[in-house]
Image 1: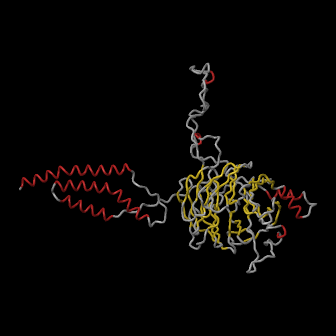
Image 2: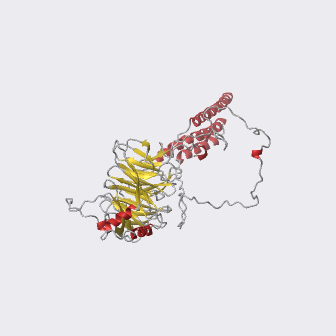
Image 3: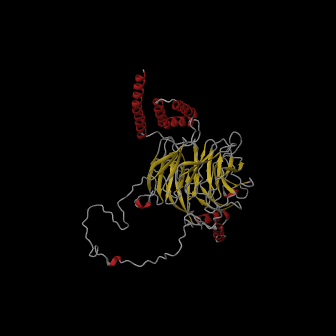
Length: 543
């Protein structure tokens, strides 16, 4: 879309379903850093990577050892690796370019979410299991470190003990949400008490506590891309936005300086005071009428918008708020439950996953404006009387004198250096970013050769006969065979494609093509008639 012909006053949020993607039953999605590739975890244990520019499948990652549904997918910072968690308690790290499995780890609990460390070369990941506290997993060594979920467990890092137990004797546990900070030095964890814990995952110590209003279970917690805002989704049907008061880098040092000023308080009060200096409540979002629970809330790429999907069964609704707290749009899709959401990192595009396994692409309904051709052209809403300037039609008006050019025409022009985008450039860029995957063209299905061989043999036999009718019929038969070959080839390819598992775009012949084929057949039949008459007359004379 050409940005010069788009009305800049239109809102930068999606409005309609532009397209949908279909490949098996997809469960979860994730964009790479620039939004050029979209990874989707499937119910059969595989991961499909879509080229989001062409909307075609770029690569399929499938592990024979994994047949359970994928619960989450996560890209590495520069897009060379993908981490997939599955319902069979496994974590699989993939090499995206080679399509090979790097490592596979089996946990003791089923992972609901798994996130790679945001560093350039991630070797650890943050896992949120179904029935255990969040843990740090070393992908190289295979070791795990359980994070504390409350201040009293800082010493042992074990989940809280409950007096209520299931029939098998195991203690119940509420799934806990957690995420890395922008640079990965801290972990922000939301527990069942409605608290946000700031944890140093290297020392496994709680460094700050923030009490969320209401004290409900925190189901989701996620940072914006710029790291300035933190989003929480609680069980009280409220989405809250917190402003991050810590510096984006060296957050641990800032915590140490903050804690040193609170020596007169006890440890718990000191942690709460430290937390109040780390996060500040900014906005709250909720539907006061329907009181719906929210599913997969997240920020837009620039952090200006907040979206949340309705968790109600049988409806596919996406709520969009601006950062000021106003509800600006409700997107209504098909009557299918929504299970995952993702906002494109760059463009105003939202991708949602339905319970049926389809991925819907929501985009803006652009209104193109072709009236402003010149840069200084002013668009008018109604007719106005034009008053010309005094020197408007002079040959050399004073206001438009030609100035001497300062361009050094003899200098060489650099056409090889690519300028880095400031929104994605980093000082720790240790490797080149993966933006696209090389396309693997799918060969067309071979046509059946028996028809071609048969027509060729018949043509040869007719050519060997010396009669004019046989020669003319041979030529016309060859033309007829060529004219009918596109339809025969299309039918054959369609028949062979039914057994192919890869998706192909099928096309039907246009009406113009059919008319041309019919005209060729008529012309060939008209050419045959004079030769037939001449041949019959020669036979009568010979008799």
